[in-house]
Length: 200
Image (tube, rainbow, N blue to C red; front, side, top):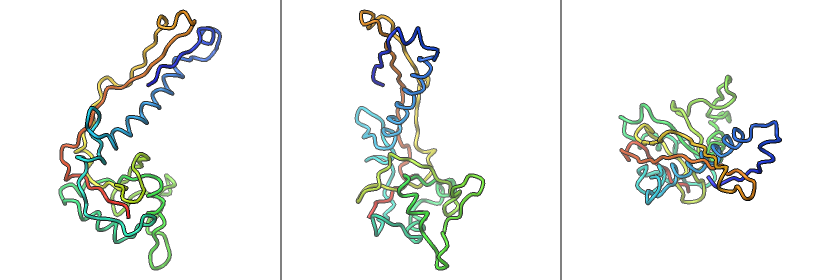
């Protein structure tokens, strides 16, 4: 994360635990940045993103529309994946794509995807769970949907999130410095286990 400076007056006078608050906020900042790298990282001096070049393989499915998805297209995506990976496969897309999927209706004009009453949101799509990933794009020509066995996408994190504090670096400004970091990397070990779909 970037360095965050906090005045000693605030640290001493406040009833709040600012190191704890900053730790939570910096962890969220880093987690969001890390997810972007895990999704779109180029693999050159950074993470190998699951949706970047060298990540998931092409399903061969290109959506006919950039703003809608059909039931047949979802079936084509599902069966583009090798049967060995299909049995444990998960869908991944952002909220915009999820909304398009939820708008698919059958000939009776009822939604294809029924909600899970306990959670208030759809459960399975064509028998498979789903994960939301806001870092997946949804523009024309982008890799907007992933489907596959994500256990073949390896993520390595070392020691988890670390928050460091220095009371010396900015002592002349009467400030403490806080910085958070995570050591991690990623790589897909079997590209055929995860397929991507190109938006129309």
